[in-house]
Amino acid sequence: MKGEGAIVFLVAFVIFLAATFAYPELPLGNAISDAIGIPAEMWNGVILRTLTSAIFNGVIYGIIVWLIFTFARRTMKPKIQQSTS
Image (cartoon, rainbow, N blue to C red):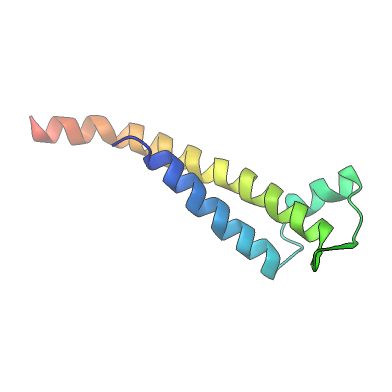
């Protein structure tokens, strides 16, 4: 089925986005926001640095989960096709 990878990415993105809002010091996004120099000021009721960290974490961890899903599916595909023959 097409589009499964996109669904996996979106689910992982939302999970890590929410996790970063709950725990703003989640690695990678916080370090990237530090390196870029994002200020810790409020923007529409949300700390700007937390928002950027959450977006970075969602994208980075979403890609990692999507890659794991893609490689796992490709390694399982030949086994599935052989068993149906």
